[in-house]
Image 1 (cartoon, rainbow, N blue to C red):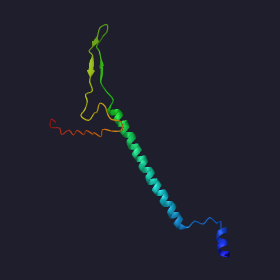
Image 2: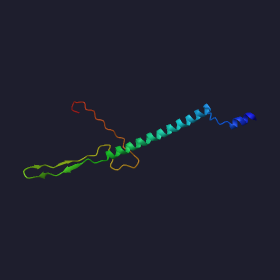
Image 3: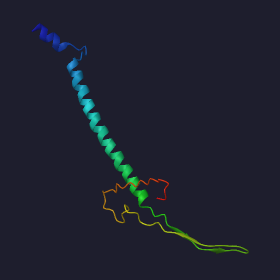
Amino acid sequence: MNMFQQFWNDENGFVVSTELVLIATVLVLGMIVGLTTLRDQVIAELADVAAAFSNSNQSYSFSGITGHSSSTAGSLFIDNTDFCDVDEEDPGTFSHCISIVIATGEGS
């Protein structure tokens, strides 16, 4: 009974190594889950930014200008739709289209 009372009143703060292993395991598992969620959200945000850039229309035009002794012709550029551009995209879906062009120098 005396030994049980001594253990009950002991307040030295001694931590058993198995408790440390358990705490470390829980912390590592929590970090893995948290970092995986962070990775997925960063990828989703970067996909949103890429979709915003791909949906921008870069067409422009300006008419000719005539001044006192000179003039300039107008110009026009129409941004054509590429094969992976989507006019109306469903919310939550992303186009994962990547175009790679390799020039060989033989008229291609």
